Length: 400
Image (cartoon, rainbow, N blue to C red):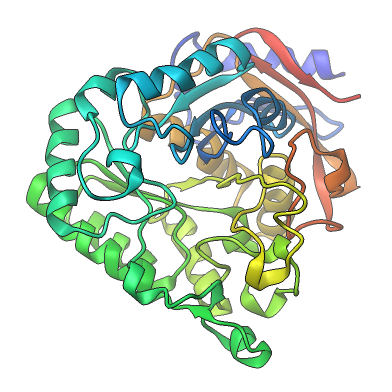
């Protein structure tokens, strides 16, 4: 039955081109199997070089393929940070040796992501998805202005982690009702949206193409909505956990700790509205694996970050599509068509994933391909199981 459905791939998939149809759903059969263009995640952490005890290129690609992804963009908070041609080459060599899907690296905006001087953007531009200091906001206004001007000249996007350091105040979850009730230090929403507001003014000044990482606050949605109405070249992403969880659902475990944090119900609803009206272009996972020990220290002391490549489609399909919030076509656009179009990442030959949409299963981190196991969705009953993922004509995952 799966092979029969896979033949539908020929309907809309010219080799080496973006999918032309909005949504990009290739086909279904009467038993509930769906064939979709390979998903594309523009925000993952594959941890190599430097932190292979958390994840490797090989294990990250295996996790991606198990979740239906055939292209990912890997963030630069590595060791060494890809801030020069030499450092980028170290990452590219690992990708060439070990990647089973399309892995595109980001280069850092500043040297060592310290925000003190610009990285060698010109030397790296040809081989990167864009420029990002992910994990840190660029604090200096003129530094970001200069980065935008150079990125524009190179035809590349600035992909921004937006965070005002002086507003963090040692926080580690959302500054809301749960934090107050349980004696935790909170991260205020202003720390995110104030830097987005600054950056949008710089985008208007410089004309740079600009993408905002993992937005979590209702104010961020509104700022981006207004920027788009002005005609600025901006886009943004959010992640599954921000669309499905709020701070009333937190537990005293490290698997609920990520940056930015899960925020209030009002923020969650604003994000859902943002994907409905097109303000939010992309759903990315911010797949950020850590060791079990690093995630075992509770909310305060655990490392920031959760995994998401293997859970994104089923939790979103269950939580947003089956509940009637959005259509399946919309979800596939957010996971594949939109990120590919914005980041100019074409489908390469036969590049698709097959899902059993009627299979009900429980999210079990022990079964993950990723070396990271921390997810707030552990134990959740979901619909949708990836049956097969094909990249460039080769099967990179098949359900056992």
